[in-house]
Length: 389
Image (cartoon, rainbow, N blue to C red; front, side, top):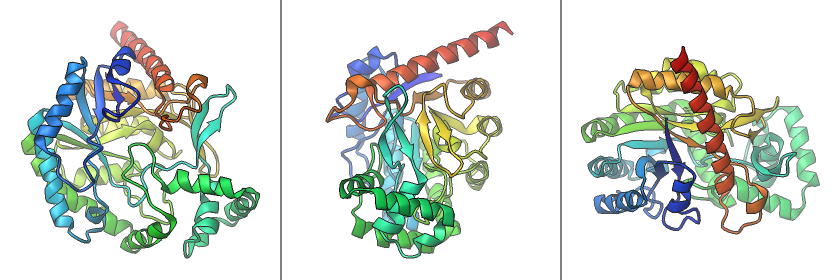
C-alpha cells in the first residue's frame, strides 16, 4: 500500500519535510483556499503538485474537491456548480493528480462532540457522545421536532447532561459540532444551520440519493475522459444527525452508488473508522465485494458503545479487525494490479503536543506518526506471511 499523509497546505505547521521524515511517500491534500463551488485553476494545481514533488513526495490523492450544498439539494445555481466541479476534475487529471476523494454529507461534515477525550494513558482522542449530541440538538439548538429522533432513554440522558453543563461547556459543544473541523467544508452559526437542516430533511433520503446520482451521472464521464478515479467517502458518523438523510453509510448504500453509474471511474474510499462506527457494517465483506472499486483507504479504529457513541481508539486497537482488513486490502490490490493509497486517519494527541494553539484535532504529528508506524509494521508482517504461503 502507498503510505500517504494528509497535509493542509503551505500554512500547515506540519511541514512537508516532517511528513517525509515520518516515512510517507505520498501527500493527500486539497486547495483549501479555493472557495467551495469555484473551479480549481489548472496552474494552481500544478504549482501545488510541484511544491510537493520538490519535497521528494507525490500528490497521490485530492481530499477533497468539496461538493457544494446546492448540488446536494439541487437548488440555486447547482447546474453551474456541477460545471465548475467538472472543470476541477478535468484540471486535476491534466495536472496528473488522478484520485479524488469527496463526500456527500449534507450540512455538517465529520462530527465529534469531544475533541480532547482523555484515554487511560493521558493522550487525547476524538469522541462522539450521543447523549451530548442529543443535548445540543434538543436543548441548545432547539431544532423543531428534534425530540422525536431520540429514544426516551437517550432523551433522559441528554437532559441530565444538559443540566450538568456550564455555559462554557455548552459553547464548546456547539463549537465542536457546527463550527467546522479540519478538512470540512465550512461552519455555521446556530441561526444559520436550522433552515439548511430543514431543507435537507424535506428533501429526504430518496431526494438526496437522487441528487448524488445526478451528480455522478454528470461528473463520472468527465472523470473517465480525464483519467481520474472518484472515490466517495462514507458519512461520518454513518447514521443520521439532526434528522438529516444519509446515503453513504452502509454496504447497501455503497452498492447502490456503484450500480447507479457502473464506471471504473466511480469508486469508494474505504474509511475503516467511518464505516466501522456501525457494528452492522462488515468491513472485510465490503472490501471483498468492492475490491475492484476501492481506490483510497483511511485506516482508523473505533471503540463502539451500545447507544451509538464511540471514540477513536489506537490504530491497532478497537472494534475493527485491522489485521483482517489489511489482509483483505492486500488481496484487493492484487485484483486492481496496483497499490492503493492509504493514510493513517486521525491520531491521538500525545503529551508533547497537547495545548498547542495550532493543533488540528485528529491531525497531530506524533499521533499520526505512531499510527503510520504501527500500520507499516502490520502491512509488512501480513505481506511477509502472504509471501511465505
